[in-house]
Image 1 (cartoon, rainbow, N blue to C red):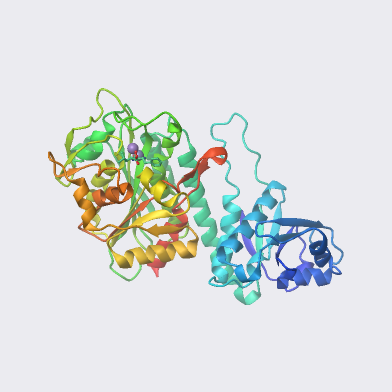
Image 2: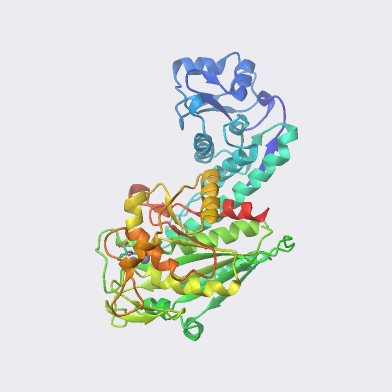
Length: 497
Ligand code: BES
Ligand code: MN
Ligand code: ZN
């Protein structure tokens, strides 16, 4: 996809397949819509009277308007002007992008970002436009006998003034990189678990690193993990015939930023399938546990995006990947294992395996002397109960780090909600036979899971993102969302300058 800016002052003079202009309800035209309306003898106002109510997310296509060089004008509804937000703008760009791709257009121009929108910059609006276009190109056809048709759309421009063109271009580049990263996350997550195994992820990691000079990858196999004494992680892996892997990505910028901060470390839960182990899950919807590597997939997507953007900050990505299956060699309830940190863990439920895998990855992260560690995990069903599919659960004892992530969530639109981590919850993890139990009872399940992880993070600033409700959609539109890649890239961009 070729992104550019269109700086011709007269929108109606632009020759292209489609131009999008925004319209508010109650017949309020955006300046771009007004310009087209004047050039076309009031064609837009006529349409508004008869057949378009401008509800947010709706659109109407007008063809061959006199006085307008574009083949089509796409009116995109923006709802009430007083309620116009970044989210409505993003919805509008998405609506236009979806139309252009479904209609097989080869090129298009969006004037939707030219409208001021409270709390946004042109850079952010341009970013949203590119993100909308690239995310709408995602098609899962890896395991279909009939492949998806190629995308006809090749050129997408946004309409800006000449003076703002470079700001808009930066936004376009960011949006394209974020969506490319999150589409990669979606692909890895959507792949079936008989294809996307831990070994497959390791191979994809090596392929990814070959594509970017700033990116290096190292893969640890079981033997090396044994030498590191990752006893907790390996105890989960031993129930499966698929060997576990531990992937270490390093993004080292060519031109290092002036500060001497340690790297930011991202850690992803990479269960390529979670059947629950001996504490077997019920059969209904168990297929969705292929998405239990969503955290790992978001590490891949984020590493891709920051490599595309040549982020000037060192970032390490860690992925701990295995399967959680019942078998004669699987963990049993009552087993006590020893983590890499030396703490012993009583496994009271083998389905609480994410924390068993992550705790060793979090201990491994210490060696980088990180300035911050963020883990992403489809960790608990309890988080879905608490926050549904809207917000990712954010847990951090560090207020400044939590605030930075909340800020990144606000500006990326990739929502998070901060959850508590009071010490009182730790009591629920008490064990009679080990230093800590791997479950904390039915109350506050998402919190006690985070509390378990917290025990392994005393060496650095840390935040945990429980993406159990946000990494994928169920039902008819079942599929990975690519979250929280937009959030993470936004956060990392902020940390870089
Ligand atoms: N991967 C699951 C969490 C999950 C479940 C995410 C459903 C999304 C939808 C995790 O490994 C798990 O099984 N957690 C248990 C923990 C419990 C045994 C304390 C859960 O949430 O039921
Ligand atoms: Mn589980
Ligand atoms: Zn799991």
